[in-house]
Length: 449
Image 1: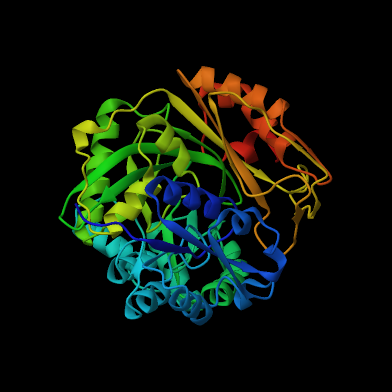
Image 2: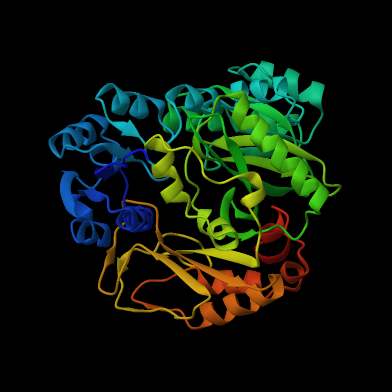
């Protein structure tokens, strides 16, 4: 039995920091939190065994300050760092610096991360591994004239994307050459501003697609398994809003094939730890590699609910050198789980709604799971993502889960700030959602045209 880490620093904040703390407590591992001046009264600071001020409110002066994080990790004498999701979680420079300082990075190797950080390089790798990819270019595009050439070769409509990064930044549907001329330079500038990389690439647009992703786990000994899929098609501006597992659209044959391709994708880059292979799927169940998230996903709890596997515990054990004790045949999908992301935002304009949470009353049932980053009296600041928490509901089947989730949201009370709960209820109560007609165009087609 390999000894687990004694102390882990969590290089994140909010609900994901609390989620990691919970798994560390299960394993008897000491937790170290970092916090900005704006987060000094946050729950993750209170719940960690140790907490250190990292810097000012702005992320560039706190949670993105690699040198400062490494300095605190060394002073706190930690064995490992868990990056959570977002922030520095997919930054190969960060993982490289962590390892250089003799600290274990709880995630994939820097090499694997680099291979998947560029969408163009990832496409090449997946194609060579035999994983289906969407028709598109395989070299970076820097000039509008080159973009026009590729678009004409593929045929409109197309999807223009930033080669690096994610979160929908620099991404746009283009229907014709006029639109490409109007948007290319602006999207390229955004990509450069956010990711320091202005290279772009183009893919053929898949009409009425679904966003299906496969969770994988891989250890140092070459064992890789799939833990089934999540459907994340309900999106607004390319950001996921509601996720569910399993997908009501997949049949067993397609599920098995996608899972095998996801495992193959991970093995092609020598991947280890937890990761997610994302696919786009058309109405005929043809699917294509989209990208690989080399980290824990926001929506990981729905996979945990239907498999009974604690993914964060597995991450920590794998990073410490333990082999996977789980075999593919051990993974069974039980019931149906749906997650909603609850944001401090106006449900009509979707603008952030910072302020003090005067009242917070959440439903409490055995089938409800909360991942909260706030408490009553907490002030939501404008400095970070306005996610205040996630609610996950499990049912015997999809209908049961939807009914339970609607009831839970109707009994979820937040006062002092606006939230997106009315918008979530509008989606869940919609007849097309209940039928399972959940493409990535759902919100545009049925709710906010």
